[in-house]
Image (cartoon, rainbow, N blue to C red; front, side, top):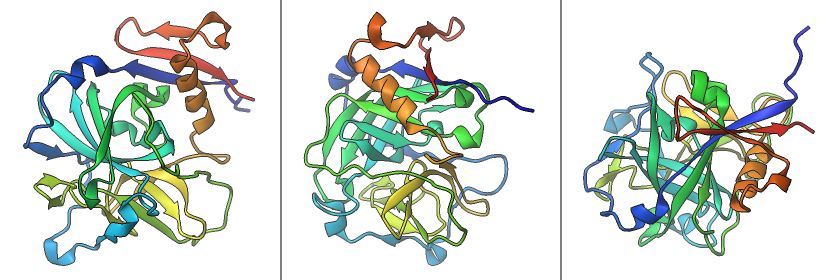
Length: 278
């Protein structure tokens, strides 16, 4: 009989927000972030076959149902190239995205800028100061653990975070993916316009259950193999564990927090926290 782990291990690293605020703005040359698994499954469509639908601009503005879905600009370690992806608000100061958007091919993100309301015009933005991901992603890049939680340097104002849960439910639920498709250029950058789809690729976007506008997962790959990492419920990533770690770190991570922080000696920038399961 297989025993269940008694704790969730959260891996995290900090970003140097102070330095990035003084850095040059995002380059005009932004590369799309396309996630593959060695198979032709990356969700690139000919223009005449593209099945994605641009959202109503009002839905992406303050008060709109998609306002809490944000656009990311990401720069990785040892690179001056920016990539782009989608994330969504779990809390006013915490985003959810795909882990491959912030750690891929042995390289970690060192700067992440998040823009809210991007598709509707001038957008407010925040920097990501800390990233937390499942340890399984850092070790083996297993797709069921392809999820990341991003701590913002300050909360977005007047927002309604997207609720999330994946209970055991019957098949044939109607789901929609909403985000910024990185393989489509609009407004001069990849993923410049928010769109919806039933099957296309939006790395990091929420997979939304239409019946109650609840996120049941994070979209990680589209095309011939369409998949998502599940959040909540009996089989998904336990978002509460990551939220607890981010809150502890925001409060200074003192000895009374109940968590012990360990350093990865092979990767000095990476640390771990073990969160007991309730």
